[in-house]
Image (tube, rainbow, N blue to C red; front, side):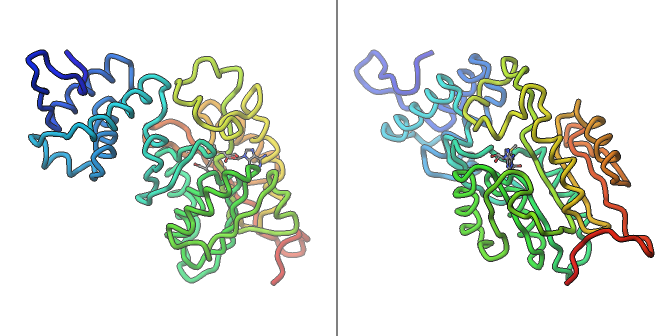
Length: 310
Ligand SMILES: C[S@@+](CC[C@H](N)C(=O)[O-])C[C@H]1O[C@@H](n2cnc3c(N)ncnc32)[C@H](O)[C@@H]1O
């Protein structure tokens, strides 16, 4: 089978339709071990043609011009050669039905993280209340901006240690019309919010173990290291996060943290040891333990737990 850009031997260029290109590329991607070959082919061809993916289905029999085929071929080369993820080739990723710009400076938001958004929303039930919410390690702003979209009255703070990530998050906030709803701060864990208290703290921290790096999908090489790895064992950010978060919670406030499935019990144990109660492990779309949730006890009469007084 010849590649989409090759001329045929009889002097006239072969006509490649949308469907021809999708079939050829799907087979090519599958042969090269790409996990979702048809989907990737559709997304990249739609991008090369400047169409929405669904519009391809109405144009299966239409020929694709040489310049669009050249753009498509270039994308195919990057996807297969350097294993650049589709989201990075497109420069955008949908999360919580919102479109996020993504660059090499941020983690591409994952569908699994929607578990965390859903669980956070369930714990912010009062539509009128101006809940104080903190997203630690916001990356592209995915969690903070999804929450801002659903809870316009919430006062959301989003932090990250990476200034480059915060730039991307800020641009996403502008594009989604949420620049006034989310405050972005740079710093390590809770250092930018040292004297503040929150009704809910949510975080998808870097939690992969560097010791496992060799076994990871090649696509991950295109994501920022400090978004992926939590030290040798995966816990270098998770552990201080679990230890320090309770001090920043209001009485009755919630802590929700995404984890690798094999970390859920350990992290749940830390939450309990830090005095949090109502601990729960949440499953992702594939049924794997994906998030740990717990709550700071509410004040009992006469106790003196520091908290917001406004
Ligand atoms: C796994 S990514 C999550 C990004 C985004 N919240 C999401 O769910 O798509 C983790 C983020 O935490 C940031 N980060 C890593 N270590 C941090 C630290 N010590 N303090 C604050 N942010 C940190 C990284 O820069 C990265 O943006």
